[in-house]
Image (cartoon, rainbow, N blue to C red):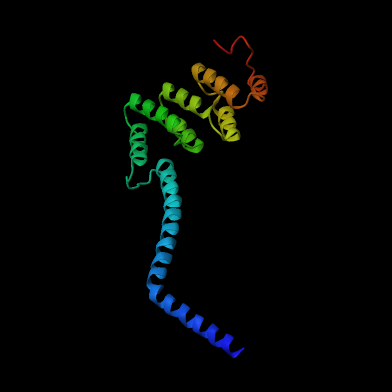
Length: 180
């Protein structure tokens, strides 16, 4: 029994000598691993937040990579005084999926151009937030021009095919007026 205890103590001392020899490397490896994990996680979290905030609230971010550059170019197009550049910006938003419904609804209310309003209605027809867009369509339908009303009808039929007939009935739209 005493021999077993002596061997055990010697093994522990040998293990401690090995640990002491490689302690610096072990600590360095642990610090690097934790830093990489925290850096990656926080970078993803902060990056997504900055992208959303910038478009929705006009915040500023640092352009560190190509997608951010494209994003801010689109943001510049949307805020241009030139109607064609704004139109290009909205199509780019749809293509890149950098938009949210609240942003587009707010832009619709601020926009004066009927072409751009119609484009915003069309883009919202591809939305994932069905209820928010349907509420918006119901709110602006009556005051909209005929071309925009037709676009709302088309987009409504795409976003909510099951509720489309109810929408048409509530708005007193008969089949003959749909495409005129």
